[in-house]
Length: 124
Image 1 (cartoon, rainbow, N blue to C red):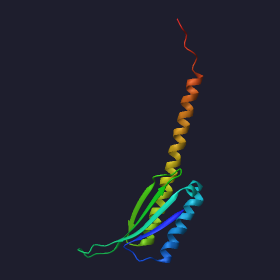
Image 2 (image 1 turned 120 degrees about the vertical axis):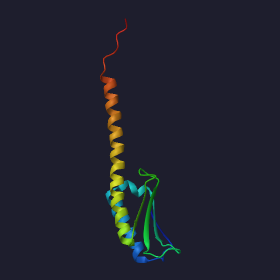
Image 3 (image 1 turned 90 degrees about the horizontal axis):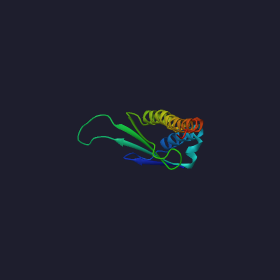
Image 4 (image 1 turned 90 degrees about the vertical axis):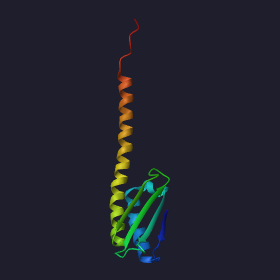
């Protein structure tokens, strides 16, 4: 389930559709995300004290499922650039997350094989 939140930003159907479309493409690549709750926060940060360009933040938080606890935040001068950055980074992070679990399972299986293949100790 994908939940889109707007913070300090007017709600825009176009931004909501873009964020939903990007997250759905991630779900297609990582089907285990279907069991998770994905929260996407679209935010605009500008300083009332100091003049300057607006900065847009996109935060993604995954709750539950295989990828529980994955959090990302990216900023850019344009909301859609920040969204593209966070999706690219999420792809890398989810790939690494899956690699880490595969490596741990493989190492555990190797240790078990080593234990089973060792000859029994002789009692003197």
